[in-house]
Image (tube, rainbow, N blue to C red):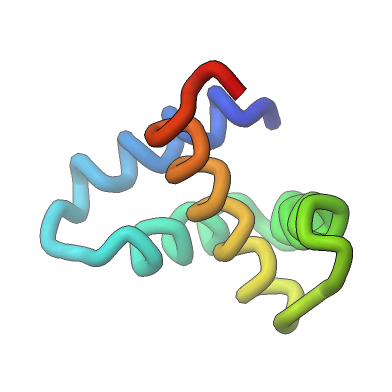
Length: 77
């Protein structure tokens, strides 16, 4: 899944759940993806951060949120 696809998934989930915080939306996205993609996102978080700072699910959620915020704040990176 590309970063762009991840952002689209996040945006669609947010449209259905406008009352939730961004981290809660990221958690929904990760839950819907399944175990294999969750582990992939957690490994992406490890690659970006250089350390695994949480359990796999929380690390995957952190990566989703980080990706969305990074593309929102600086789309040219």
